Amino acid sequence: MRSGLILAVGAMLVLAPMARADWNTTDPWKMHFPQLPNNSGQYMGGNILADDWQCTESGPVTDIHFWTFADYIQPSVPVYAIICSNIPDGGFGYSIPGGQEWGRYFYPGQYTVRDWVVENVHHWQFNIEDIREPFVQTKGEIYWLGLRIQQTPDQYWNFSDNHFMDQAAQWTGTEWSLLGGDMAFVITPEPATLCLLGAGLVGLVARRIRRK
Image 1 (cartoon, helix red, strand yellow):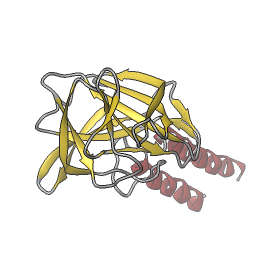
Image 2 (cartoon, rainbow, N blue to C red; image 1 turned 30 degrees about the vertical axis):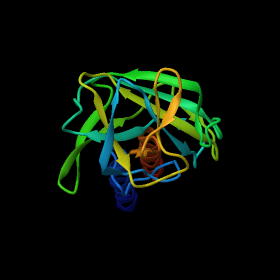
Image 3 (spheres, rainbow, N blue to C red; image 1 turned 60 degrees about the vertical axis):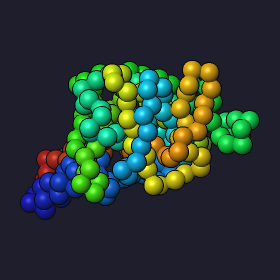
Image 4 (cartoon, rainbow, N blue to C red; image 1 turned 30 degrees about the horizontal axis):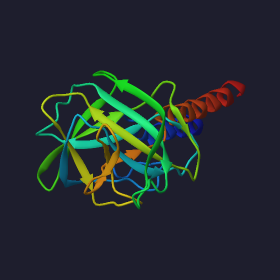
């Protein structure tokens, strides 16, 4: 009985850090690789910023994390997120977002924000998790994540040194145009799945204890 209890508690302790709302560099992801923030970026006005990623695990996109400059972004404003298909050659010699396949507004209380420091410069890490009615991605496919923060003055986005495929693009109202860098973001496995796994382990141990 004692060994079963230790196993259950140990499993929950292991899973608990993975089920947090925020994300750290030691946590898992389900895209080509995390695109971590650097200290460069660009003003976006009211335009949508989008960047491509390749799915490495089929299933729902329930957790999205991205970074902005803390000095320019309010941490309690609506966030608009979209997911688009990929057009490998948009007619300009580079890929661009295709048709929108999913979109959602997220309001304060539907995401969390934490401080993230890069070489003494403060950034915000936005964490959108446990998304209801999420987009379902397919392993090996390339998609585009588009984001817009609803605030005034202009939004100022983080770029990343972790380059994948083509650079990020912005929607100008008539077309997609490439920017000078890659967007800082990461798509991760859903915490709900990890919590359910932990609950299942505890239930299994409890049943074994009852049988004894």
